[in-house]
Amino acid sequence: MNPAAPGPVDNVFAALVQGVPILIVQILVCVVLLAIGIAIYVSLTPFREHELVGRGNTAAGIALGGAILALSLPLAAMLATSTALLDIAVWGVVALILQLLTLAAVTLAMRNLGALIKADNTAAAIVLAAAQLAVALLNAAAMVPT
Image 1 (cartoon, one colour):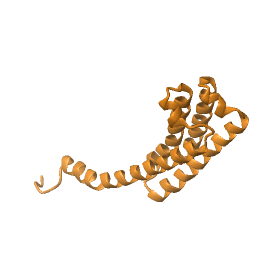
Image 2 (cartoon, rainbow, N blue to C red):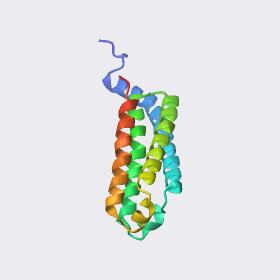
Image 3 (cartoon, rainbow, N blue to C red):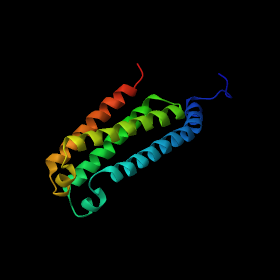
Image 4 (cartoon, rainbow, N blue to C red):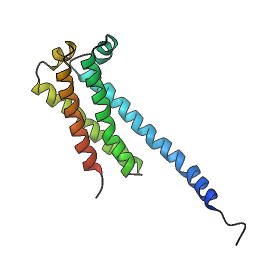
């Protein structure tokens, strides 16, 4: 046995030293994309989530919570399946666009969505959140390589 040969603990430590900086950069890219997506989302909705949530509006909380989860699911799929930062960034942007299009589609289908959310209609919020999560799950699954 060669005492100078690296052992399992040395191998794990070396992998951590090499991998953690990459992990941090990838997570930061996803957090930035998520923050941008949320900022765009709240600027496009026909209601003001932060103000409504601050007043205890449950429907606004459901809608915003669903949007945050829906925006993060495809980003998480990219983190799980790709090591290339460019892939994560490009497909992350595609995912965010698809989620914003989902918001537009639900807003068109439910023409009075803003008024419903402002009136704390949780049923409308659940429909919006469910549509966003459904598209996010399909989007995330489509991004997983076969």
